[in-house]
Image 1: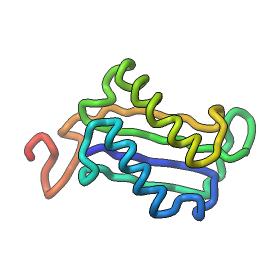
Image 2: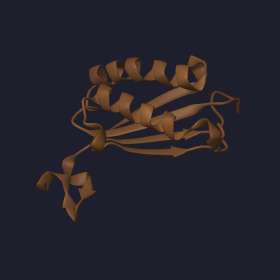
Image 3: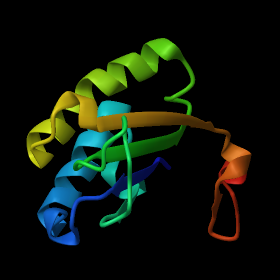
Image 4: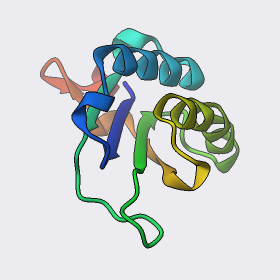
Length: 118
């Protein structure tokens, strides 16, 4: 169950339902996970400073079990997600950052238990 968190100083109107569905589909495909297991949260309109400027920017955090645990995997994920974000949001490469976090099954709760017991 991947968790995708997008934080941005772009206005809420930038992140339509269509954009959210496309981002969910893209990240699910890149991570090799089914879309119905994805969890996406978008936090727009945040006060943000990146590289010394408050120009429009995005930080995407990807937390997942078994697919974000090596530099090689994350390099490939980044190469596939990054162009989507720059293209869809009209941002230059220096205004997008992606962070990857490793989750273990016991760190994710669902249906009253943890993923290691499902």
